[in-house]
Image (cartoon, rainbow, N blue to C red; front, side, top):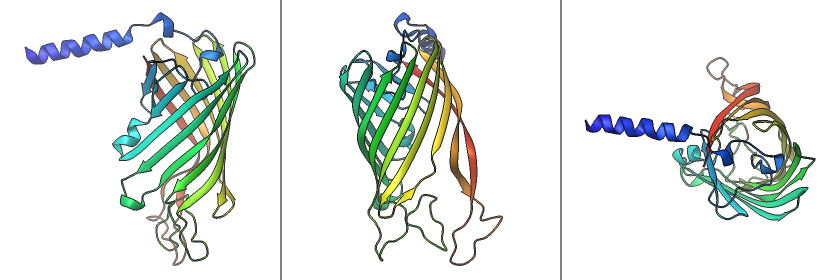
Length: 261
């Protein structure tokens, strides 16, 4: 009987979540879209998804986020977005990102980034968002030639191992609210290393479609760039003094679902 009651409570909970909320049932205009824009959530509003970060509005100006998937992988992470100024035609926010892994001990890599993000509204259904961040990789992976380096490793410079890999990251995003329930988002991003060596990483372009089912949202699309998904050591062993090869794919699917509360 106890097990049956637990199952009934679980089914009731799912049914409650499936009920649409009129306030969240649709986007009235593109100014209400916070996904990938400078806009923040309202106080006490939030969202969580499979890959989408858990987001919560601390105040009407401050939204904080964290990826639970990273936390499960022993990687502490947090993002804060603070709305500095807003007008009917544009909004400007400051951002701060932090991520530190403890999986590999004290020398595990981490990320720290700070910058600004601005969104300009071109009517009720179109918006353009630009973001620029200073980014630092803490304890970057060092290229172990002849060993097994990471795809984004850095070389030892002047006989020393760099403790921080400095860079600048920029993104440009276009939002098109096709209907009150359908959103098309196109994003391009690029990161430039500036220290210890100057290098440009492969840019990425992502196109996704988002449908609003009420509380639930579904995202589907694809991202193009250069994605390392595995080594080819078993097929072709590297020669002495050379790095092993990697499987590289130019396109990866994007699929996610999240819940607004």
